[in-house]
Amino acid sequence: MEVARSFARARNRYEGTVGLLPTLGFFHEGHLALMDLLREECETLVVSLFVNPTQFNDEKDFAAYPRDEDRDAALAVEHSVDILFAPPVEEVYREVSQTTVEVTGVTDEMEGRHRPGHFVGVATVVAKLFAGLQPDIAMFGRKDAQQLAVLRAMVNDLRFPIEILEAPVVREPDGLALSSRNVRMDRREREDALAISRGLFQAAEQVDAGERRADRLESTVERSVKRLDIDYVKLASQATMKPITSLDQPAVLAVAATVGNVRLIDNVAFDFESERPVPDRGILLDEPSRLTTHLADDGAT
Ligand code: PAF
Image (cartoon, protein in one colour):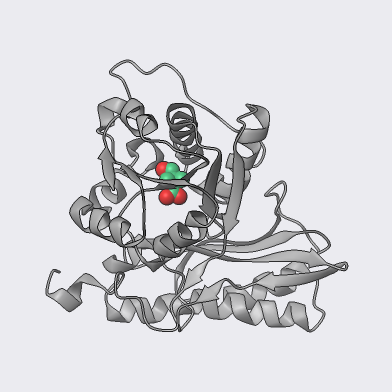
């Protein structure tokens, strides 16, 4: 595996179809599952590792974001990554940077409302990665459902000749969605955080039993997460990311809530098969994740 620091260096190593997995690093089993899925789809597998400063609307969150490039590089080797693209900030943002990418509409609600500037940071950095690395395929996880809609809109509007693949949410055996931020929760907080996936799964069961009203599904989740600091619980269209009142189209039931100092997002997507909504609860790991156990386990907090 090659660790490339510049776009040109990364492109120099390409053979055949190029697949890109953009990441903020500090890999967990969710990233590793995505690497394995994308490995099947391309000849050259590129994983980018860049803690993008412009998408963190909270400086403290940026500072606290876990980082360990050596650990990530070792995991990337184990998962047959060809190129780990880990640029310094100057390769991505020149001293004078005059261009940003703003996707409108799909960014109005949920994360867009609660994290001002976040999606401009995401769309701008992903546009830079697409322009600089020129992959044929790029993969994003369904956990960031609104990000996926934003990036699909960007690829469509800017005519990037890149195929976007979606990967399922990867969960702990008890349901908690994997996130690099999970390491910042202590045991009690982690226990409290389980209310999110529990509420989403209960709502998914209601849908399986025939419930279609958004307010009923949202109330189920709200009841479950009532002890957390909730930003939103919303049933939204997958295409527009706008709230809908009835589950009559592909949708996501999405949650953002803070546990301790850690803001978590999660969702269950509803795809349609033969005119019926089918919940995508993601995939559950067979064993608890080794990579997102909280830092207190190693005496680090
Ligand atoms: O989802 C993420 O990890 C980030 O938002 C992304 C897509 C790598 C852009 O920095």
